[in-house]
Length: 432
Image (cartoon, rainbow, N blue to C red):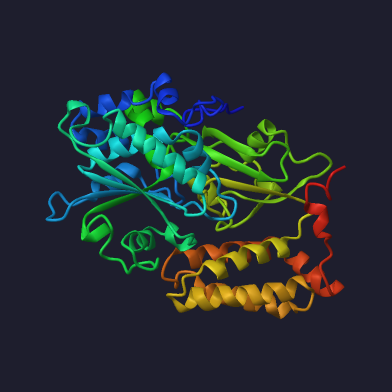
């Protein structure tokens, strides 16, 4: 049985976990002092050796990403933290920033020092005002303590951190759309190349990382690369926050080594709600192909989940029992993607719109089996042809649900309507 590895979440049960005093009581900012005694390149190498991969979905090696910055540039270097968490089911970064904002601030300082940046930005989803206020408070406390500003802890290193709130656009989770938004433009993805590492924010070399990626850096510097690499699997090293939501007895955040299985996580969380059984689930949020009960023992690491036909993504494990209509769930996700498409490219703009219209008709039992082939054809015209990953992600639940639950789609046609009672999938409607 895999055990939990509380690192980022270790002090969440303390009343003052979000304060500098509470963070320092548990050893906070010690790693910063260690880092400032190291050469920046040595920190980059430590992160590379740890095997830390991006915790924002793509899983790209973090240290390698830092190493892409050109050795010289006439423009300043920037670190940008992508805190625009807004995909259905994804809910790890917001509670992390709420309960332990200083681990992110410390990570930002160490990471900025490692890449030789003197200005960093934390781009936060605009709707989470409570988190924005907490981040502002944490940054202010860090300035007061001399962890930010001029000559940090007498090291000669200067750093300013800006907390920037977005306007509530899912597309700004895409790194180049985030940069456009940060510069004051409408959030839309940029054509690449040039890549942000060469010409990013204000045309300068820019590193963009997820909240959890940057928040993991202090523990790696403080405990060593080997400590981090000792957890997880050979190619997916370290720990991560697994977010369980939906029809599970104890939903919440479970910090564990990569490679843990959903079966183990369900054991820890009390299992599927009483009297019901697992029907389908997402391993990495709504933009990943869905899994079923037969995937309970797939190790939740990048390689194993990929080999099984999905993506680990942000480890947003949405759990659905047998009361849930797959068609209805996919319709709801598709409505989200149609609403959030920036409209820059035709495949995503038009494809997600037709997803929404067709799935709504199919869910009402008004379609035909031929419509399923049309949905798959639309998916083929989106996948790999959209300007960014939003379009690709929108195809995942549609294609995988037709593959795994084709009979349920047909059942809607045969009965002339949805065979499921939506109230049964609610907490009160499905209770025994």
